[in-house]
Length: 413
Ligand code: PLP
Image (cartoon, rainbow, N blue to C red; front, side, top):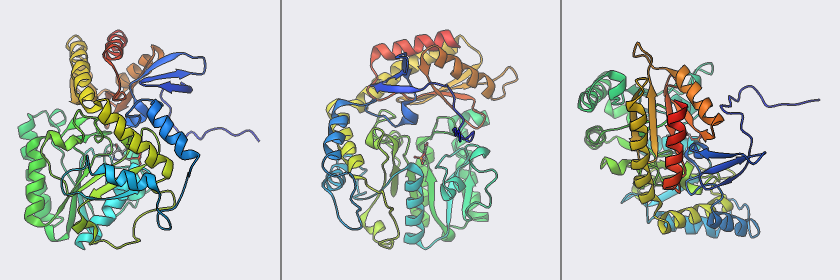
């Protein structure tokens, strides 16, 4: 019987990657591609960073898997200790899973158990994963939700302050979003029923829309006033991606729970939630976890990832290269009236395509993405209509590669 991959997979480029090196991918004919997708923001230290490879290789020969409900292992203990260097103040308890979706679900279980309240409020355009509870909180596109209803009950939606979407200033969009949130808490999900707000500091799949300082401060204030917990989904924005270690550092938003994955282990499946001891101790031991949680090789890779981020100044590099990339993209957009917005933070930048009627133009964005791949630049799209072409290279990307990417981008559009 001949078998082949299911059409459930929608592949954008047709490239078969044979090897990766830093911000580059080489296909099976050794053709070189600038990988400005980083495996959807995962390979933070670049493909196969020698120190991550060495740490993983060493660990593979020592111990691949030991289940944390039975025995601990040193890479896990080392990672827990090291995360104290980077986690927001007060979030001194961590727990591990394998993917962003699982960590989102872990956060959901934690806030429901800790508060005894059933509901969570999430925000329009948010992406929190594809498992059923995570998909219930996801509204960045119907493809993540349609056809497998009923989704989880108890999820309520409020607007995210998206200036481009509403055609308003950031201040107007923020004021609207907070007013609608208050209305929701007054009419649909009372504070006494609401366990948490779950929000991304920068909408990822939803179109690379940064939150505003006023918005996150507004969530914090309402959370404090009503005993609601603030969960920041930093799966895409964490580990230096935005030019600060955490995306919320741009906005002074103090979280009760942080969810992290992607860049954490440079490509090994690992995710985590972090919260205070007081909060974690309100949930039930044994209610979280899974067979593969905190895999020893993934934890060793995560420790090496943190070493590399710190020793090579990758957060600072993300900020500097992000500024360079933004300037290049803005220059291209200035000459092309189909690109109506360049936005994002650090090395998480999106270009919004609109047609002549001002409508989101996913067809052009998709065509541009494919043409860029033919010219050696790998990019992703996002946004509800697929209308945003996003750039998320590894944090090790250098000045020359950013220039080269902008050059290909300019020719492509
Ligand atoms: N949360 C955010 C903000 C994400 O961007 C993603 C994935 O893109 C997820 C959660 C889900 O992560 P995973 O695909 O690892 O399950």
